[in-house]
Image (cartoon, rainbow, N blue to C red; front, side):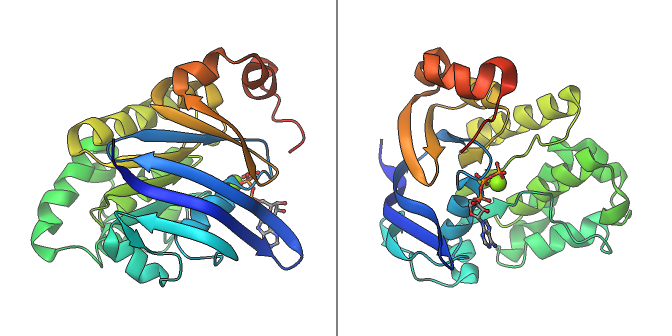
Length: 243
Ligand SMILES: Nc1ncnc2c1ncn2[C@@H]1O[C@H](COP(=O)(O)OP(=O)(O)OP(=O)(O)O)[C@@H](O)[C@H]1O
Ligand SMILES: [Mg+2]
């Protein structure tokens, strides 16, 4: 499988704090790759560094054969990488429709109507709530809107940071179903950070375990699901323990 995203020796820091200490990670075209790890391991930092904030301190990020390590965020989005960040950062004062329009800023305008219809097909509740302000949506609906907005930029690679965080099991299940659908039907490649390691590993083709800024383990989703250490640290008992 050809690599759509290839990260090599990636380092990132916040002042003196080194959050990524030389990460190597590959995402093949068409894959769902999960990234699991304890609180503070650097998962969000990895997704944000791919998008150019924070900047990589060392290493390279190659997307579709092109070195994007030092590009501006808007240019990275234009090349086809889109992120639904942790904590559902939608625009609370804008309506559902306006949030989707913002997501489509870098996209081909002739596809707008079709893309919007697709988002409402994936998340029917968003269609019903199209004129409601983002900030008044429920937590689950806001998460759907964050994913919908990311989809509006017509990404080839979708970065999802904890899409099921804080959601009731049924809503989380719906979100996982949508992630599967956009991967299978739209051929969108997905890099997924999830605290729900069990779900993430079941869904992922491959996965990586990040520990205090370094990748310590990788394999197929099934391999990591069967791995004793992974089970003890991230699944059984649900302990997200020390990073
Ligand atoms: N803006 C920031 N300024 C300073 N330090 C930061 C900043 N953001 C993150 N860090 C630190 O970088 C490390 C990695 O944080 P990051 O948010 O990437 O972890 P995470 O794996 O996403 O954790 P969680 O599961 O809690 O979301 C942590 O030690 C964190 O305190
Ligand atoms: Mg995080």
